[in-house]
Image (cartoon, rainbow, N blue to C red; front, top):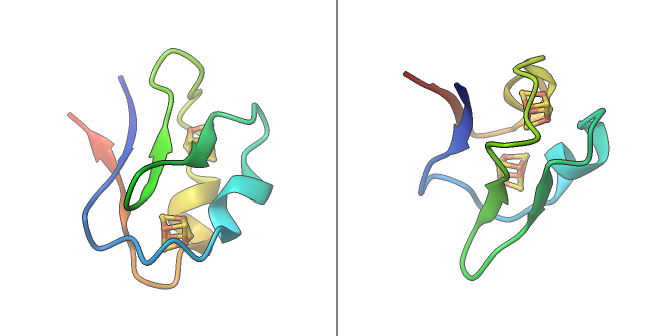
Length: 57
Ligand code: SF4
Ligand code: SF4
């Protein structure tokens, strides 16, 4: 399980700097999370201005 960034992402980049395991990088038209690295800390969801990172159930 991991967090996943939805299409609501506006590519502000804030979340990438708050991820403790550097699992977030800039993708084609939004930021993306590497599911193999995400430890589900929730930091990205907490700092995102548009609530784009969501738990991928
Ligand atoms: Fe990184 Fe935590 Fe977000 Fe996973 S939940 S991508 S570990 S900030
Ligand atoms: Fe996208 Fe939110 Fe991350 Fe900004 S903080 S890059 S809007 S997911």
